[in-house]
Length: 506
Image 1: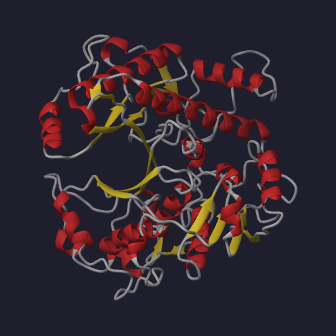
Image 2: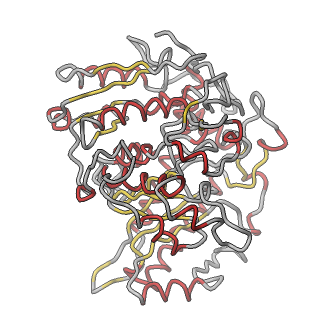
Image 3: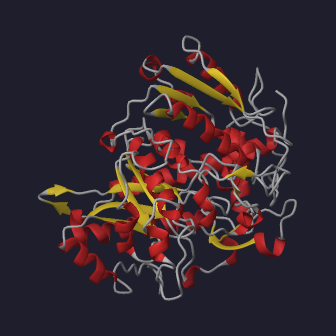
C-alpha cells in the first residue's frame, strides 16, 4: 500500500509479512498481485477518475462516475509506474527469489481488462478521449475535428444486431491497443527493476497476467487484450480464468479447454484458474453449503469442476489453481473421483489420458478472429435478443445454483453466451476425432508447421460481420488478407454461426 502519503510504500501491512515469510520459509513460491483499482486518500481527485459510457440504456448515475483511476491520465500513469517499480524492488530486497512473479492490475477482479459496473463501458474521461484522438491521427484514420471529439458511447444493454459501424470498431480497437500497451509497460517495469542479488546474480521476477473468460459477447465491454499481450517479451505467465458460469447458469466445461488451447503457441507458462465463487455457495461463516452433496458425487458442481480440470489438462495446461473456495481443503473432495474419462458419463472425454497434460500437438485447427465477438453484447440464450433456450451441457447441472440471467432459464436449460455456445459445439465435435485442437484467433499464429500437421481445419464465420470479401471490425481487411494467404494451400471448412433472430445472411 501507499495509503498515508506519497512515497510511503508498505509491503508488509495488515500482517502480510507473517503470511509471506511463513510461505517462503515453507518452500512455497509467491506471485504477488499489485492492485491499483482505487486511489490512496492523498490522490483522491475526481479529475483523475475513469468515466463510463452514457449510451443507450445506460444509467448515468451508475455508469458515468467511477472511483477507479484513469490510466490515460498522465498524473495517474506516473504514480502507477512509480508504485509498481517501488513495490517490486522492495519485494525482491526482502524476499528474494521466493517472489517468482508480480501481477500488476487496475481491474476490480485483478484481471487484465477494463473494469465496468452496470454494463457501462470505460474509459470516457477527458484524458482517454484525448489519447483516442491522438491515436486516430497516428493511425491515419478518420481525423477528429478537435482533440476532445468524443468516441461513440457504447450501449449498456444487449446488442443483438451486429455492429458494423467503422467508428465504433475504431474506438474498440483503440481501447484494446491502448490498454495492452499499458500492461506491456508495467510488465517491463516488473522484469527490469533492480531489486537485489540472489546467489550473486541480479534477480528479476516474472510478470504474470490474469485473463477473464473471453470468446463471448462481453468481449466488447471488457476488451480482449490477451492476444496482444501473449506475444509480449515481457509477459511470462498467462492465467486463463473461468467459472464456467458466465451468465448465471453453468455453461460447458469445454470453454476451459478452448481458453487453454488458445493460449498455446506463445511460448508462455499457461495456468488455469478454477474460480468457484459462482458455482459453490458459501455460508456467512465462510463454510460451504451442502458440501457433502456438492462435492462427493459424479454430478452437478463436482462433475462440472472435474470436467473443467480435465479439459485444461487435455489441452496441455502447465498449472492449475483454485480461487474463492471457502474451504480450501475441499478441493480434495472435488478431484477425488477424477479419472481418465472412463467410468463416468462424460461422453466428451473419450478416454483421453491425463498423462498428456503439458504437451500440445494438435491435429485440428479452429480459426476464429477474436474481434468478431466485438459485434455483439450480452447475446444470452433464453434471456436476451429473443434467443431460444439451450439445454444444459449435462442434466445434473440443474442442481447448480443460478444467479442473474440464470433465473430466467426454464427447467433443463442454462443461460449461456449464444456465440460461445456455437464455438464450443465446433470444438466438441472436433474432439471426437482429435485429441487436441488448436484455437487460433490471430492469423499470425497460423504457422506453416501448425497447418502442415493439421488434418482438419474449421473457420467459423459470423454472418454480416464477416462477409465474403471484407470483415467489419478493426483491421478487418488486413486480417482477412492474411487469413486468405495463410489458408491458400491449407483450405478451411466454413461453419456459419447463424443465430435465430439475429443477423442471418452473409
